[in-house]
Length: 348
Image (cartoon, rainbow, N blue to C red):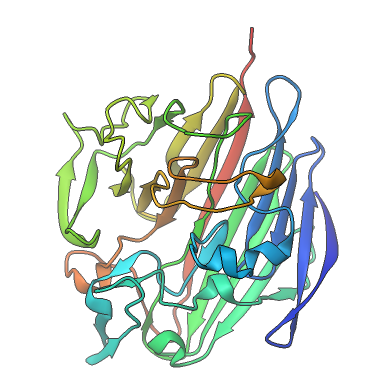
């Protein structure tokens, strides 16, 4: 893997913003900004031998911080923290202390409030091997979360066409942590609606949500429902075309083991995109609310033009006694690994 550092010409919060370019022996190319740990480009060779970018994003960094983008902010390609997904009423208790978070998705807190890790400039740490390690220290009280939390995220692009994301976090005070990456993927050469993508998830249950998309704690079997992706099927085969999917799936696995979370493919490009993770659940989102003007090559993005597989712990688990894994204590280390793997099929 080769690594190249490129200046963007931007300084935010007194920190310089860089684009970090990763390339492997196959010519697979990934560009990551240290602002929001955004994966802005993931260029692979499809089965026709053509270069194809499989993530939604912008041609210029300026567009990630422009008013037109932030007005309909979809967390495009960014890392989410301190806490992914929704926390009911924005409230939680840890070590006997109750905390009230920002209600940026009334009446709940979504993806950590108005200014999460996706809008921070991360430090670039020196590494021995050719990889990118970003670090951000969130001060005690930021977003009303307790504890000084230091997060490290290492990206590595292997010669097996795997983009590896390794997360680590430590705190000096009892807090909650649930990190994920919010990449928007499309495997079709011309982009557009992803309803014809084939998709599989080894998940026998999904999590019930209330009317505001907050997890209640109840597990529901996928059998006999539109949420059954145990066998590969078209994403749009039996979905509600007005809603798509915005649901958390509980993976059939032992928590902590690195196993498959999903497998998605497109017949025409011949691309197969697999996600592996140590996390216990994956939130599958088909981008119903996506509305971005002037994406790559001037293309507008709209609902169902992408899919997201957000690997994480159970959302709202800090408020559900049956769920564990998101409380972090001093002396402990939060760890999570997610891998994006690209393969191609032979097109006859």
